[in-house]
Amino acid sequence: MDLSKKKIVITGADGFVGRHLVKNLMEKRSVPKENLFLPTIDDLDLKNWEDCKKAVAGQDVVIHLAAKVGGIGFNMEKPGELFYDNLIMGAQLMEAARQTGVEKFVALATVCAYPKFTPVPFREDDLWNGYPEETNAPYGLAKKMMLVQAQAYKQQYGFNAITIFPVNMYGPGDAFDPSKSHVKHRIGKRNNHQGAGTFNCRPDGF
Image (tube, rainbow, N blue to C red; front, side, top):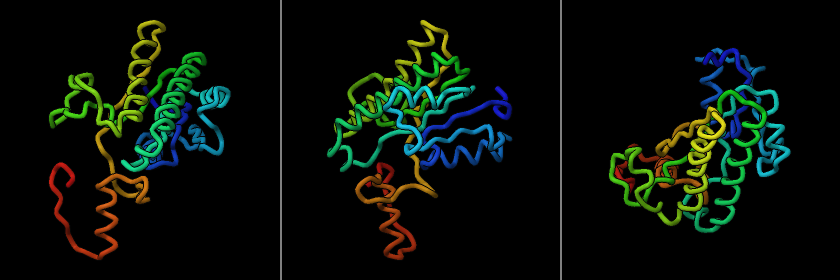
């Protein structure tokens, strides 16, 4: 698919992954800025069905990055919101895209969907071999349902949808709010604040 000639909507484009993706599409994939629709939560609330229809109207490709997400503390404080908001956003947006006739739907899921005791390195075959880590489960399972939905829609409607499960990501432009960030992010911020030159971290993050 030649993306340079497609109308593309990216939800969550103002987030960490979204900003890097937009830059990549414009600089390396030659996608004109005017072909990108980058609605923010202030523009469209994807928990609202009508806003989902507005998001996909006239678009060829949907890249769904938007999510309610946080670190362990946030997950423990708001598990219900994390489950419902992420589930309803993904389900409604994919259905709106299907009804509209979008050519391709790309959903970004999460490594939190994997079972708690998944062997390292992770393998796709292990995705359904157990329940996720408890504090991550509401978020992880809500995102995992986009895979189920994409497979069901392909089987029944021939809809072209894929779901990507990235590993942990961090780097320039990431969020370092102590109440929402992950361990690696907080270590990096703490290390930078203290002015240390290096720090040691085991492969498991601790």
